[in-house]
Length: 380
Image 1 (cartoon, one colour):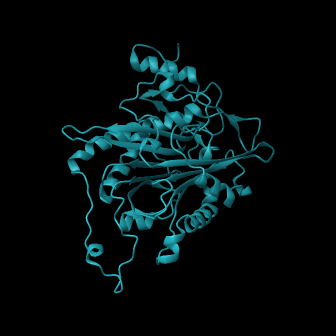
Image 2 (cartoon, helix red, strand yellow):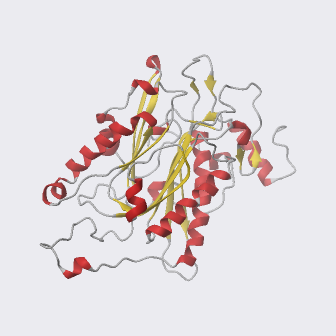
Image 3 (cartoon, rainbow, N blue to C red):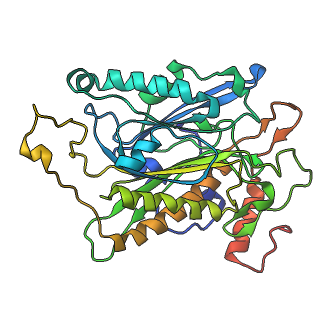
């Protein structure tokens, strides 16, 4: 969120399909805010942090957020997922961090919710069930140091903003590796236009990319050239990718789950086959139908009829095709955005060996190949 020039994939002339929102970010979805806490201490080999997503910003009333989850490969964690699968909603911020930061992030987010929604917690019989997700940064970060603290998570939650977002080595993505290159946090958005439909919708994604082998990596179908010198992570895929999809379109939980499934097609365009060691977990949520009051318990003492029978709006299933296309396009682009913005970092066990960042000149050459298929990406 700094004012300095942010280099993104479109700046390198990659012709991604689809119309983006103003910021080409998940924050294009009205009300969605994102906050980061980045922890870097070179002397202690600490390169980590957390990313906070507030689906409805700083609304003071806790509310239902319709959602769906899809797990492509389950070697990872996302808390609250069982209830989302059962009930189709959650009511909390989302935190993405490293594998050993799940516990403190859950604790801190629970405390934040109790404080922020103090009236609800004092007057209603409710409890916090935060959504916390992780990917493994232990190749770069001293993950066993347990560097992330309660105050760090609180800072990310309390400083969430709209607008342009930093990408790459920021927040939970600080120490992540993608396709043997430096990865991390990436985001993108699409404006969804439906023929003969008066309203346009926004769809945005934010992901924490830490997956894939170097030999798999492609950019818009063009293989990324092999390295002149191999690094020790080129052919290792023990990472994960967490993808959060947001939209302001009114969708049912089952429709959102189907949306989440399409994130798998987005990451496949970059080459991954979702290896055994990867936790590929995708969550889609809708900010529509905000006035649904499922969070207020109904019992014998509170049995008003308008609370017993409720209605929500949702789009016809046939219109989901426009959103499927948007998800695939935005996920594909967000992965490359994460890599384009990322900076090299040293390996934890061999500080003389760096995980390199993606080569911007190679990306520009690949963009020429895409625009002119007779061009050789390796000879430009």
